[in-house]
Length: 135
Image (cartoon, rainbow, N blue to C red; front, side, top):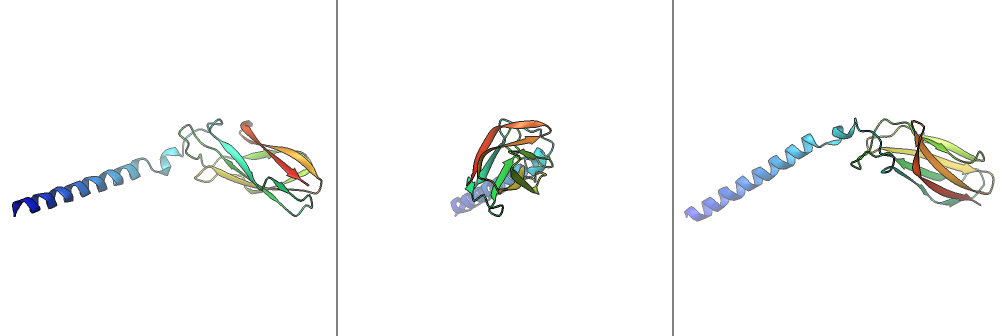
């Protein structure tokens, strides 16, 4: 009779210890910890979807930029800008990064061309670029 009670008490203590560890980790390592981080440009990146679109001024290519810190966490409240050919129209959807470090832009063109897109923050360009095509 004593053995099942000891096993149940042991399991309950293990469960409480696990819950305490999860709760402590969530509080002390939450999103707010990364809010004062600086941008690690080598960790940050951009991508586009799709990579090509019709050159009709209507079809768009979405470029998403992620500014990350040295630990790979998003850096919020940073202003991002894109640079491209003057024939590419850049519409800002979200120029200030959110809690995940994301900024979003829509690109279109009336001219068929291949363009290289560069993202920057605080006049510092990200080393990665994206090549897009309007046909």
